[in-house]
Length: 125
Image (cartoon, rainbow, N blue to C red; front, side, top):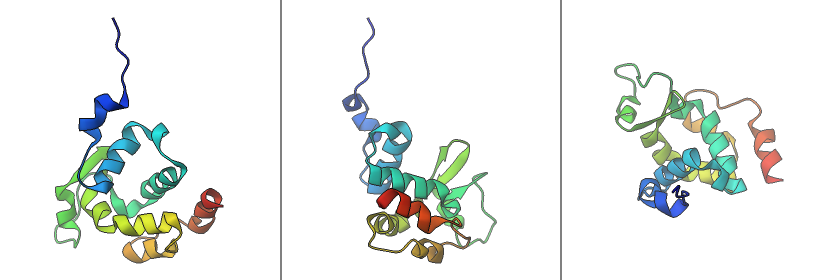
């Protein structure tokens, strides 16, 4: 007898006290359950190279070296969870329209992505 899987069966695996961690767990396991606003947030996170590391390593002495202590392997890249937690409110403020997308460039050492204003406008309007 095959038992179908329900979201309630996954509640322990998806739960986390940190909003950002809980979001990442849900977003990458069940992206079809995200609201439109959450889909926009996920897309911005995925396009934020600042939050990702290809090999899970940073140069010794880098100001972000401690951020590798907590990372999540997703599709062959590492999402730097400490960095996402640090800027979680900022990312949400951009998605809700409280902050302009350019604020994400100011928290990053690298450029965000070139057409960020039209990208967010396509989802919000």
